[in-house]
Length: 425
Image (cartoon, rainbow, N blue to C red; front, side, top):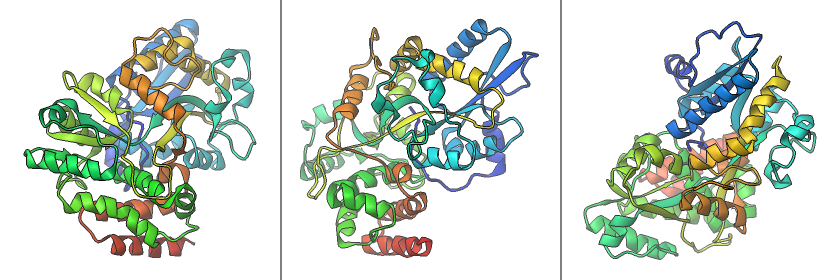
């Protein structure tokens, strides 16, 4: 699922205009229905997007006087300027996809997030979620502002099982073993790792996880909130792991020019042995990875103060626009999203729904189930820098990471980031 944790450069007005036209149900004026509700999200792959068509049909059948418009933008645009443009437009969405944490809280502060606690405690959602599903979806205990949707592991190492088997390679459990695997793959003439870091979030997420593993979760949190120096010796050591990958040529030369979806394609075509990205790759694989034998492993253990079995993850959901004239009707649609039938659709599409019965009666891919288990049983779940901490600090960090993975000097890159963060302070 292309649910990505990303801070990216601004997009042009032309690009936004093109993506606004991408809608599952079209963006043409609706029929003469008494009520029109608009649901906005980033593109999630055909399997997921078609399920929203199914729910739209169910909803309009149940409520003949209502029409649903499902607005789907190209994912990278949605997460940068696209959603904000929609929210400020004359036909703003009534509900929209978002991540829990800072992005959600920013919408609430801007007056675009409604407190939906009353609806979630009603009969329509009774028994659909455990209390833990709402973690990060409140604002200082003032209320709940999201309908939970999915839980995503946001960085894992996906690998081509055929390449590993042909080369006699085992799944690495330590970083040294990982480097040995990369060396063997490179020697065979295959690119060890492909990443599409054009928008900085893919390697940025991985760097977040590596940093937390090396400096420890508490110091990582302080660093990403601007309370500890970005260029500390510990952070330099942490980013040295990425520098090693760049220095040894274990990653594609085009790493900072390649879009993430094109990197996914390179992996699906077998042109690289590994890719580091989130659990949503499973949804993309349903249409793009046919015939590929692949699996995943968590980032191997590093030498550091953090939990070496930690998982980088985030929860997602749908917010309701506080300015909507149809909040009750919108919640009726989101009830379908969280229903047992809706849950089954998402699980079949390769997602990990946050409802209490995500795989009940579903012949789900064992990797999808495994990822959900990894997320729910992890001893420590760490949030990516751009999803759990200060967004401006994350932007400076991701710029530094892009420099490092592109072959730049670690100390210089982090010094530059620290200067930028000092100006924020």
